[in-house]
Length: 333
Image (cartoon, rainbow, N blue to C red; front, top):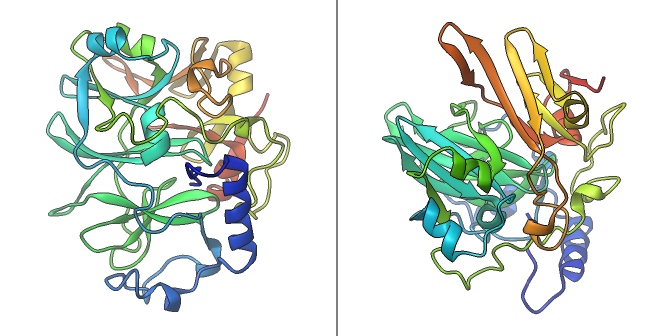
């Protein structure tokens, strides 16, 4: 959630936010009323003390509402874009789009429509959680922004129609009029740009509306996924038997260590097939994403009568899976 201020180093920005947190950044609905006059704080499914300020205010991390795309071949030829940089790939009804983490790192939410389906493409760097939602709830089509708040170190979004708050990791409304409502998740892949390009020349790639607005391609969370513990915004219980910031492939209440999947190449569980293949940069390693270490490409599919189909999953950190799925199982061997 933290973003470096141009006049400050990232380490100074982190320290400023941690000081703010330790000085009393816990939730206080009474103090939020001025900023959130339309949010019904009488309705909530969580303890407000679980919510912390991440530093930025409401919409301080600006969602993208008018996404700009370029043909995949134009991006390959004209943009300084590494072949192994990670993108979130969405394919619906013949429409194929890629949402690079180099852009989502700085915006976290893209409100878009693909194949006639209104979607929200989301990325929480602190949990390494990439989730795409159908924005339709009943007769409403919601669009989302950032609250500036965190719960279990995960992005708390809000919808602009009711200003209810939503947990990005779960797609669940946790505060306000929509409390208890779940968004439908869409099966997507997080893969390298090179793999996306190979899937079809008709693909389109999200590009910044203003290339000078942020340090696109840069990673403000340098070496984050090499830490022994997440940033102090997470105060929950750590998982047993696995480093907190080790990547896991989460499908519902089960998760598999990416280290295990990398070792064996393919895992099967019931009708699920999980595969790993080298060739994708970590977005949370070096200061430039294109130089990040190889964390590989993961595909999760299910056997069907007509072959295989992609399955909703998330490649997230072990601590986040444990926080939101405390009764879940993480397979490490």
